[in-house]
Image 1: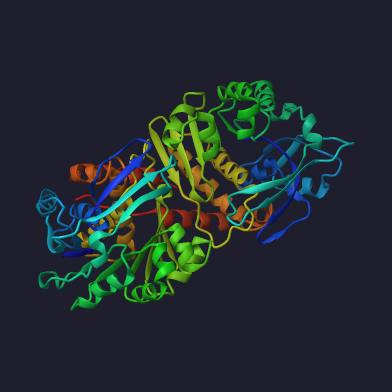
Image 2 (image 1 turned 45 degrees about the vertical axis):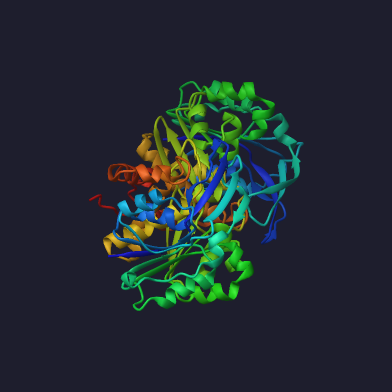
Length: 307
Length: 307
């Protein structure tokens, strides 16, 4: 049951109230791969890196069952670089540097060995690039999940609308859901977005949890209340990786199983924020994940007799 | 199993993006009484009103099992009046008018007939007034719940600290928890506040739900995702009334039952915001409440097998 993940592999330099990093490994596809590979193998990565992307990081991914045949290595350009500084509340950040570098030339090619994958995770990229991947697949995956961002709503709305018609599930944050729908109420925003193509919508609300909408059904998953959010970078992609990883593992894309998948995604995201970058994700064990999922169960379980 | 509720009975004039009201009945004790009286009788009210408080509103409360022996009627002054305007996001508001009127003279007297009550809800009032009520009770209630606000943290912190030492459960919103504790992380804020007296802490996050803390335990209840929040006035007091009403009905103050009580409180609050003021609360039936509680169960229930 293979999973294709398309997105960036990058260097990030991060400042938070807790400290700062030099260039560390980041990128949406990296986080998705680290999260999803706990649940499904192979994870088939499509991305682009420059001459400077460390071979040991590639090896670390391969060791977890991540296939890199779809990762183009550009010999004469550096990898995508992003640098940002988080504010005290950890919910807002300033971007300090965005060097597209190799990303400006990203023309994803789906290797033959990836054909037939049943799950596709389209990380946040220019919508026309996401579409190129969809167009190359000879068999439509069982489930196509896409992430996007407000930038494309402002600059490439027509392309974005075309991709939305091709996917099963859209994953955005609350601000993006409001911008895409033109509705302030998230319930109304969901109704509007579910008319635009996807049959499922997840609205991520960061520390306030996530909502899953499908038809008239709605499910809410909290974020785990944490003493400290050390570094939120990659938490959304880690959530996506845990979510689609669980679905691919269980081969069940029912609404009921998506609820469970959201809890798994939230559990993975709660690890991600505990250390800089993907550091914590590289360490977590199956036992850690099981224990964390149980914490989510305890967090929301209640009993009531209606008498 | 009686419940004493102490707080304001007032006139409110409210503007929201959906419309505006003339003076309608409000006040923390009013909302607590309307919510709690679905679960427990009698609700024993302690408050103060002026010559202008309508007798039919008093009758409406009495008809629901609310005792008003502890409500002082001042013949020569008008009732407390508040007017406010909500912003588009419905989470923030501007206060337009605060006329304390009779509230400036509030000196609560606990009637003999209220002695022996096992539950006490101290609505948001000057801490010294809350203390006066505690001091008059001949038997300590089984559970004392208090609400407060940031205004008292700035203007009467010493009195507030004294009351905190006397109560079992504090109910505040996220901003107030941060101000009271000096901690941004709500988990850290909870640890600090649980050192200040109360053994239980509920942090209300409005549309983002509520957290219950007790020792190392934590429970999270979502708010119901609503198409429209029509008027949030009184939602917090309605939550408190549903919460303590359920506890009083079931005579069970365990952490487990408090989880259920928070869901009941959240359900009652979700009705409150559907119409102006207490309008919707006056209409809801037991069937409405049961159905709403079931919606909360559906909203957060998920199944997972850890294999």
